[in-house]
Image (cartoon, rainbow, N blue to C red; front, top):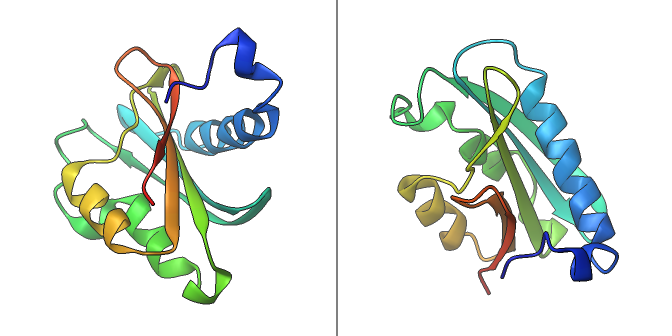
Length: 132
């Protein structure tokens, strides 16, 4: 489901504002080619977040460097259903596609509390992927 279109903009204003916060989090990191910010959100409340940077999108094979993995460990399953907002930028702070890698997607989908993820697709549109 593509959500960043004019007709849906008002309807999903809160989701886009939260995604902007995730993107700002990614931009705070000053190193390397790819910078990533991840937020865990319940309803409209941000529960936790993390950031990381990579030399390139394929460079980061170590699981503990993925911010998705870190936030999976940061929040309590007692929180209930949550959504992930994942934003990535390049060294010039321009948005890049931000769908989680295969390993991260497997871990996210294995977590029953994560019901949706928001990320930028290949065309840099913000997408909501419903998992449950």
